[in-house]
Image (cartoon, rainbow, N blue to C red):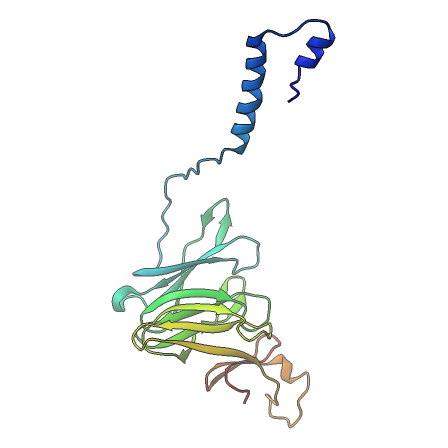
Length: 233
């Protein structure tokens, strides 16, 4: 092992003392040990922000496209909740006052993904008491459309979003406590004559069809047709 300072001393014709060698070794070893040692995490005192009644689940995601993670909570509330609260990130770890959106009965879990392909993160909530999932499409700027509910199994306690069929679109999966099942709702991209003019063209792509299962909801925003279930209409 070559130690800085020893070679130069020897070159000058002077051998370092054993005490000097030990000091150099200690410096080398302790320096390596200090750099390899993991740091201890430290957190500041909590800063509390009000949300809806009885929050049971929280997710962090950039809902307004500013590159900062925002807060979304599912608020069960024992009948006084049935909302999600959205708190936009103002920067520096501070958040705006909540904006609440209604969802199904007994929201237990919340997840976010771009379900309609417009590049913005939408909110999906598992509602235990109504046996549904609520889908709230992101309208931009951190605002969301009114919910659309879709039936799942009995007592959904948890929801997850992922591309289960490899088509590049996030599908919905819920864990259903009461009937020992999981519900899978596939996300299908559907093309059709949405405006009823008898022609499937780009005019139809200016409308959005979002549905889960056998239910469909039409809106005049964005430019993609999305269906969740087993087949396109």
